[in-house]
Amino acid sequence: MISFFIGIPFFLSAITKSIDTGHFLRQIGKLRLPTPITSLIAICTLSTLWFLAGSLLFSRCTLIAIPIAKLFLFLAIPLTLIRWVLHKRPSCGCYGPGIRVPPLFSILIDSALLIGLSNLSTTTCTRDSLQILLIPIILGVVLSRMSQQKPLLDLSPTAIKKRWIHHSFGKGKGLIAIVSPKCSICSQWFPVLQAANRHIPVLVFSPEEVDGGFPKLSQTILPRKKLLSWVESFPTVLLIENEIIQARWHGVPKPNMLDHITS
View (cartoon, rainbow, N blue to C red):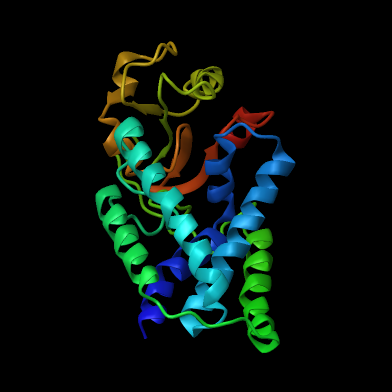
């Protein structure tokens, strides 16, 4: 029974990352590794999380799962602490953009899991156990491949079709750009936003004033923590129409981006 409860956080982490693998890939992409290596890390991590979830939920192969789970938690605790202190993250990011857990609470959960794992009885690996655990691993790989370009279930606050009301747009069409002066990619959006502002209203949210040539009234300065409670990363650009999010872009703007926005 204890093993089952310890397995639940690993299952939640595995399933949320698998139904929105694009979000997970973007987080790994911040390490600026070559794309093939980034994809390999994502697949290996998800496969391992699914193995741990299956092993702990069904108490199979825990002889192997327990030390791997401990290693995951030993890495997760300092990483969560660093993201909290240095980057002012309001969520630990352990469960994707859909399940937001405050960093301090996440560290407490991980510490409790470590204690639980240390007191968990072990079960050896049999052929039957490995065959059973192969099912969630394959499921995780399939889901992650399907959700890289588009989330199978988008739980983020800025998901397409969610409502976003702002008095600047009313029922019309507008663009919201959430950027940061410390984000190198954000500056690549500034010419696009300036051009789009000739066709539709553009509102820029930032933790500091950005030198992008925008009218002063189009910039709204908010705390970084507040902005990161809305979006997963900078930049995030949202196309709003009739108070509904119609499109969302991250990262480097695509070629002919203005056509995508104004069409």
